[in-house]
Image (cartoon, rainbow over all chains, first blue to last red; front, top):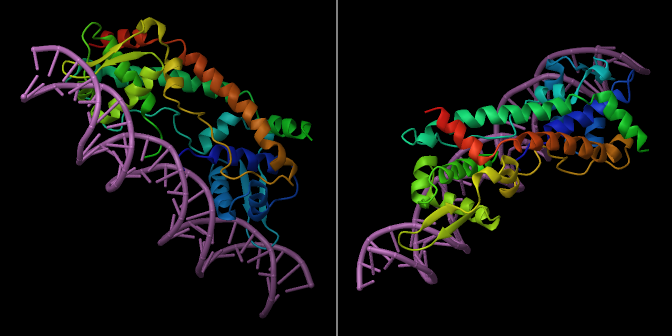
Length: 140
Length: 140
DNA sequence: TCATTCGTAACTATTATAGTTACAATATAG
DNA sequence: CTATATTGTAACTATAATAGTTACGAATGA
């Protein structure tokens, strides 16, 4: 099952909410568009609420809506919100400290990986939820 | 167990081989530095051999060595060799084609993800195995 | 001939993810 | 007030990728 789809699903959810400002959407409706279980959606929305991107209304006629201008949410913000970690992973077990390479490789790789991840995030920061929605609508 | 350490381990292996040009290293020796099982190392080395980065000599006094100048192997090359996929993952199940957002979101996200991955790879391409080894040695 | 090493298949253990069930709490409509 | 719809969350299960491990045949050189 491996790599997480949370980022993709979060973007899908936010694009939906951005396309329906004014009328809150239920987790069941969103789940129908994403094609998954409503609980999965509610879990993710809970994370996005903690970051202040959305708000919820429990009870009859309740639902979810954006609480921030979708122009002000970048894909980098969302990636960080759903806590996707580094796209790189260090050794499962610490390398041998008695080996000159083993002793120093992680420090060197950390620096390189940080740069690469930063480059990726800079690119993601160039797109907003609003921009995403516009691209989706342009495909109709 | 989730995210793969293959890229990190492959870089560790290649840095070791680059630090010992002329004298082949055994998978057992490399495993000792990486702190894992020799079979894990041989599996990865098999992949790197298929890409022409290393060669092996079976039998007594056998082992592995670089078959390419470490200045000519970039981290992007290695990442591609070990087949780390995209750092992004689409929906587990296809979104609802009856929904305007569900129908178009994957096409839009693919384009955005490709750009972000490209930015990451461009950054990785700026470092070579030789450069990695130099940084490791600079830390002694 | 023997010890060493690669090459590779097969099996197991671990773990993150997300799908699912269940149910209490909340809120509105009527 | 009551019925209904909805969120909020815990608990459990299923799936799948990863890598650790065992086993053993093939190759090579001392």
